[in-house]
Length: 273
Ligand SMILES: Cc1ncc(COP(=O)(O)O)c(C=O)c1O
Image 1: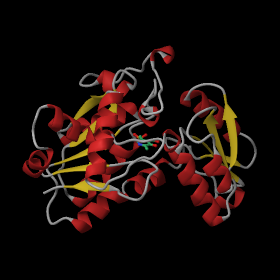
Image 2: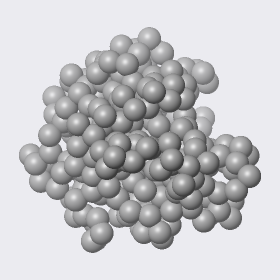
Image 3: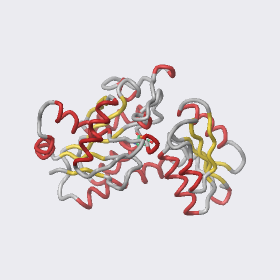
Image 4: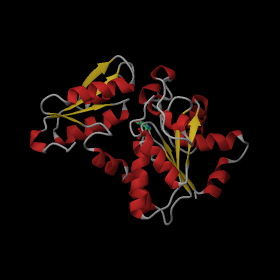
């Protein structure tokens, strides 16, 4: 499907578990483009932030995948376009999500030994892999998803297999890392495999431990459940701590970067060389 000429576009329609919707609401607001965000009822902050940013928030009963279905239906209406991460503007989405790799390249003298990235649909990890390849940096990418609640996690290291829609459990802590069908699952697995990295499962306890550990480093990926924490890549911190290692030493030895996502104060990366 080809993107529509912009002059015909009157509205972007997307589905979100919270944060993509926030970003799109702000971006559309900045260029004066109407935006409809489909959000499962009870998720994120219920749409408060997106409404304040000027988006029309459409709440639905069901899962993130149900929100995706509804957004695709709305996107077929006249003048609307599908702005989902795997929609006709996927290349623009990858370019946008990949900017963090360019920022790291500008900041660091040499590639990190590894990069840990939270995974939901897998969009970010694919985008970062593409950007790193363009930059000529060979960096193992480690994806972290919710244990048992994301097909990237449950499929690894095998081929992509979606989960039973009733088989996943969403909590206040794991929401962005949960889905029964990762929209870009197969491509994300390929990207992680090609990079020489792996996929890792994070339990809620590990996510919470990681959050506390990050706070000691001045990184605040989350404040309250409504802001949807995702300190998932810092699972590494938690692992270091639970195995009795000093995580600072552990990280220094590895030269690892953790990409922290979430709605807290700006603290995009924890870096240790
Ligand atoms: C805070 C946060 N972390 C991680 C993810 C997962 O990213 P991706 O779907 O690109 O794998 C999301 C997705 O919306 C998110 O909101």
